Length: 284
Image (cartoon, rainbow, N blue to C red):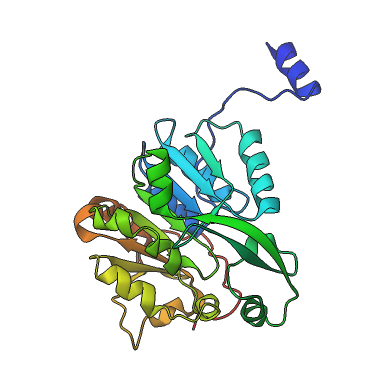
């Protein structure tokens, strides 16, 4: 057996599926580990090279599904390689070469300084200012909506969505209006970062007010842990969120058990929190 395995490695053949150590390496992974459940359908919206997709796929297991949306072609090809070369036991990861927005369309991605992971639908001049004078290149990309994707595929609605689309999060939510009107309330980890939203001409209060009307409440991921806070138009963020950028949006009725499972990650709990990467600038 050892000789056979050595031969496979020598000639570049990969081993069969293996179980990975799912110990979180960051605060964000601690959140996923506390919130995801076996068998979940998860949407990774703004999948980048697929690190979150693969971690979620291991958490939800072979009975779950992860759909990874990535509109920037160079990053999408990297995502595909990353997923295909991974040999861990996990859920199927379905990669989609499109972004999500409020309508189906072709649109231009503004990419600062060649960083495709920071590509955005924002106006090039506004996105350049948001990145403090970065050189912007534009690339055509395809976008669909949550509702259109679910209608076209017949896939069951997601239990969990990670939304990280460089300021266009409000438009992703609007593109899921049918999902919400049908009564579905996915648990969501959403990037809410005011400097990026400003490039689109809206405010953090806009997605918060939209979700509040649907019955959602919020836990803000801050360096000291999750902070329970009810946003207002005048004060959309708690003070601790100045160095944060992700918000957990949950329905108290639908997600009580999962949110309770994350109580050890709340600010003031005794659990050791893994490091959280700082935002590129204060969030205000």
